[in-house]
Amino acid sequence: MEDLRLDSLEGVGPVTTRKLSDAGVHNVMDLIVRGPVEIAEITGMEKDTAEKIVNKARQHLVDGGLIAKHFVSASEIYKHRQSIGKITTGTNCLDTLFDGGIETQALTEVYGEFGCGKTQFAHTMSVMVQKTKEEGGLEGSVLYIDTENTFRPERIVSIAKAHDMDPEKVLDNIIVARAYNSAHQVLILEEAGPIIEENNVKLIVADSAVGLFRAEYLGRGTLSVRQQKLNHFVHLLSRIAETYNCAAIATNQVMASPDVFFGDPTRPIGGNVVAHTSTYRIYFKKSGKKRIARMVDSPHHPEEEVIFALGEAGVIDPEDAEKKTKKTTKKTTKSTKTPEVETTVETPEVETTVETPEVETTVETPEVDVVVESIIGDESKDSEPIEE
Image (cartoon, rainbow, N blue to C red; front, side):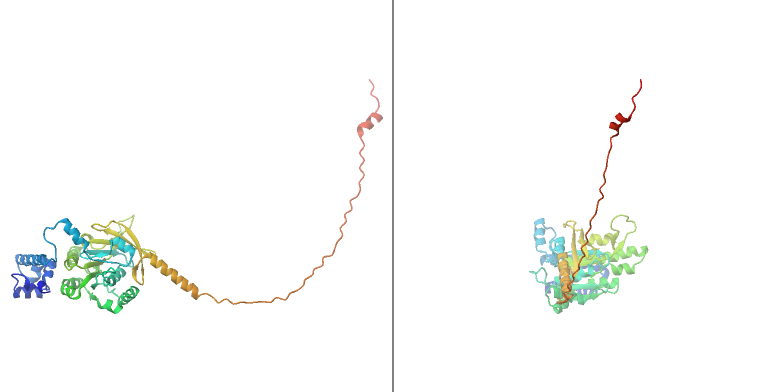
């Protein structure tokens, strides 16, 4: 754009423009993103001069209506918040958790252990942002910073087909930048300004944001340097999202805290530096075949949990996963049905006549004459009289 060129600022001549361009600052927005301290370091100019140039750039953007004024009422901020773009996740459960979807001008951090769905979520959002605004997208492209070599275009194709989108167009709108070390990762983000403008980038994905810093800076002796470098990267990502009006997603790794005896021992990497910079912080964890997403930190969202699943369409609702399993089970039962064969076995009829001989059983009971003589009557006759 003509009004965002460096030479459009008052007091910025060809020499200063060339010096800034050689340092990777190509437009007025880059001045806001980098800040006066970093401008002075990368260009070699004095700090006061850098502050004046950055202040002029900020005033230039305020006059153009691209950023907010110095003092704004809360009602104006509320009206501005209503017009902020949101990217739907394609699921009812995660849209409920995010209150409509991933917000622009904000940094959303997703952390969790391996296999919990962080990369699948990033792939899904790379497709959903390209949908029309009526369908919940922003009709924009994606800048995907891949630090772990986990980006898979085949997964993008399957997700696009599941959402009835053209896979070739979806792949063309995703710009992948493979970062090989932490310095390269920061450099990619520093030079992302012209790419964001030219390609209408509405989503920046850093997968993962902390992996290379964690691998290169080992031990407690390098902890301070690592946190400073990581702080610079995360703040740069957050300022780019706010200045260029795009959404930013950063996936984060976890570690197991050995001093936790009760509860979940997993803790995100990066400490308070990443925690304070992230606008929204979501924790993914596995629960069998399903996944649980919990809103850990947010300026206005409640702390709640939702259940989601993973499928061909990326992140899906658990109800859709159950329907799909029922359909697959029905298909398997239909395919394994054996044809019914009518077997008629004729058994020869055999007449079996069993003659039981008639046996006459006569039981003769002997007649017994029982004669009972009374002794009392006979004693009166046979006994002799008692002499007195």
